Image 1 (cartoon, rainbow, N blue to C red):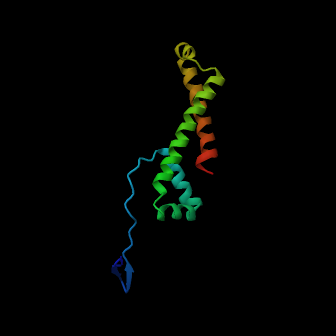
Image 2: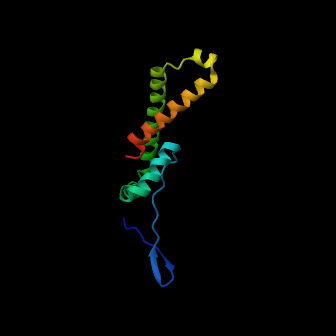
Length: 118
């Protein structure tokens, strides 16, 4: 079956009307968006290959899921290691919040270094 190619006039040139096939709608979270920005800025060939093969959204959704799972696992592990308990939360909420924010920042840095910006 032959595919008919159509063209659009752009100034003095006829350019082919190219369109990627429809891709399924996938929600990509903050981790996937960070990785997308990283690919565009630092690995444009990899980005273009994923985009033109229609695998970009699935790839980013997978990275997002892995990063989210890793983040929550790290927060839990670091909190247990630091001895952050519900009792501390009840006794000294501000201390608990400070320490938990520190743990979340550590986990974010680890996920960024291990998964998002690599």
